[in-house]
Length: 177
Image 1 (cartoon, rainbow, N blue to C red):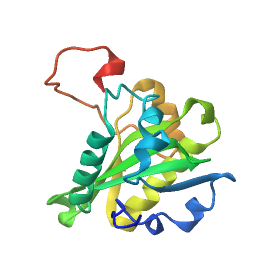
Image 2: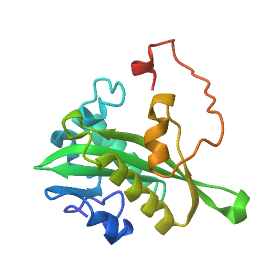
Image 3: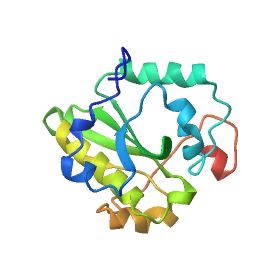
Image 4: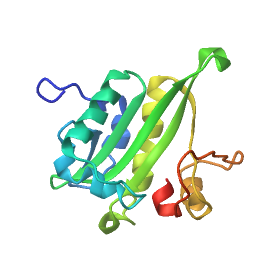
C-alpha cells in the first residue's frame, strides 16, 4: 500500500524464490497509482500502440482495476526508478472446474534496452506464481507465432486457436492490439 492508495495486490503473493531471482537492481512489484511518471506506458509501447493517455486517465483506469478486487494483478519490473517490464494476470472466475479460477496472461512487455536479460521469463514466472497463490487451476495466453518459442521456454504449449472479433475500424497489427 502506498500512502492511502491501495495497491492492486501484495507483492507477497509472488513466490519469494521468484522475487529473489531478479538481477541486482531489478525489482518486481505491483503496479502503483504513481507509476505513470516512471515510464509504465512507454515500456508497453514495445508491445503495441498505447494512444494518448493523460495521467488523469491512467489514474482513472488504475482505480477501476482496484475496484474490481480479485481480478487485476498488474506487475511491473523496476530498475533505477523506471518501469522496464510489465505483465498482467487477469483472473476469470468460472462456474466450471468446481467454480475454478483461470488466469489470463496479458501485456508482457520488456523495454528494448533490457531485452535478452531473462526478464520476460522472470515476469512469466512471477505471474504463474501469483496464479498458483490465488488458486487458479491454469494460466492461458494469446500470442503471435513469432512469440510462441519464447512462451514455450516459459512452460506454455499451444493448446488451440485464438479467435477474435474486432468492433473497431481495420488497423495495422501494431495499432490493433
